Image (tube, rainbow, N blue to C red; front, side, top):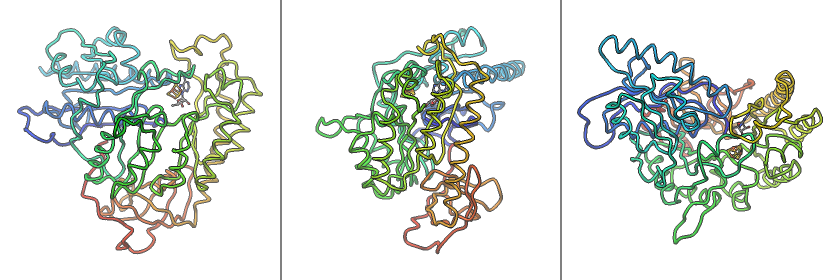
Length: 485
Ligand code: 5AD
Ligand code: SF4
């Protein structure tokens, strides 16, 4: 799953949950690191805590409870958490001097992987809980508030958290996330996810459809289905049938008012015929697919336990493009995997040239304790990794710029999600996931409108509204809502 560069500053909701008003109002600040699944989890944590009286705090300074929802995918990501905990220790001490109490919780994949170690390294932490236990968060917070020692819950419970979460308390906005699948059984040899998120598990189709309908009723026009290995989705369908992701997308496409569907992150091995057919047949399924390949070398792919070779990936890309000719592709790449030779790296560059990506994420291999590749004897020196990364990123950047420039002069449908940085500007997404800046009044937030693309930047496009705002295709004005982060 593509990681975001910067943590989301506060995923806590700004309003109380539905139902009874809690007696005491407390302030919650959630800082989210890593992937979109963490963003979704943070939103749901806020839902769980709302009945306890927790409202959003603008900064950690004013919060009674600070949750760091963490990422363990690479060393850099997890080290960030400990430096943030250092800053929070000072805030907590300052609060205590004034006779108050700030609670600190560590959630997510670092919590799952390091558990007790977090309390040892950072005794200021009150609560540590993993990605599969946050439905118990209200009880855990209550217990931590009473306890002198830190509380830990990093179990993999037999019950699914989704069966125990409250309904969403607040709309997400025009573009919403919906987790449909969790965990991973693939065990790529570099990856910590199967250990931190646990075994693959899919939500029943009826639960997904019900959540999607609620999201649409609250203003969502686009839904991105999330899962660590989302196209391995195999949820319970009606009458005891098992639905794959393709079947689920066909059913979601029938929801009135849901204009756009996306899903992430996929494994090439799980791209089945029905899912490819969904790309061919569903206008709502956006022509953008994040399909990580990691490497172009068969030797490295085998050592990574990716279960496919470069040729199979290229054949799959060809089938997808036959189904949806305008499909924009994205990928993840790892350079400097143990044993990667110059020839192996050259094979990656060849694959990139052959596919032609609209955008991609690339990383230096980072050994994760407990994963097989971390023990491999033939680790690649940092300097070589850095050199290869720079070369790969240069090629990917050229492709991205070329793709963006190819959009200039075209009219693209843009879903306006937020206000832009500049006054009088809105920020939206093209069908191909590019960020698009447009001069437009704030009242158009939440609408899907045609935009004439006038200018391409390396990481975004700019354009102007095309056509009349009263066109029937423009869709209804969404009610005023804010993206929670
Ligand atoms: N080192 C570097 N990159 C990694 N990824 C996963 N594990 C590692 C690691 N140990 C990358 C993969 C994956 C993305 C989410 O993060 O490219 O697809
Ligand atoms: Fe990690 Fe591989 Fe699973 Fe993706 S498919 S989450 S890279 S183990």
